[in-house]
Length: 108
Image (tube, rainbow, N blue to C red; front, top):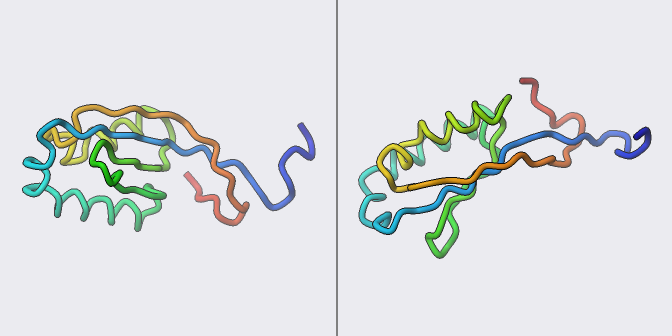
């Protein structure tokens, strides 16, 4: 609908991932945490990850990421060392319309 989004703003589709920690995550995580955090930092630097972090209760991590499709977002999560070593034992992924300034949109 014309005029629905104010001038200078846009809706960027990103993916929200909630990755659940396994029951023994506190034992599994230390061995691979440095590798996981280094990858998160690289993906942030490249603009793929918008934000990432763990909930304080260690129930899950929350990741906001840019990907051209749900399949690409799934592949990014499955490639993470936390998923490969079962620190994360499952995840939920959903599309989110993120409000941004037009100049913040990154080309695909």
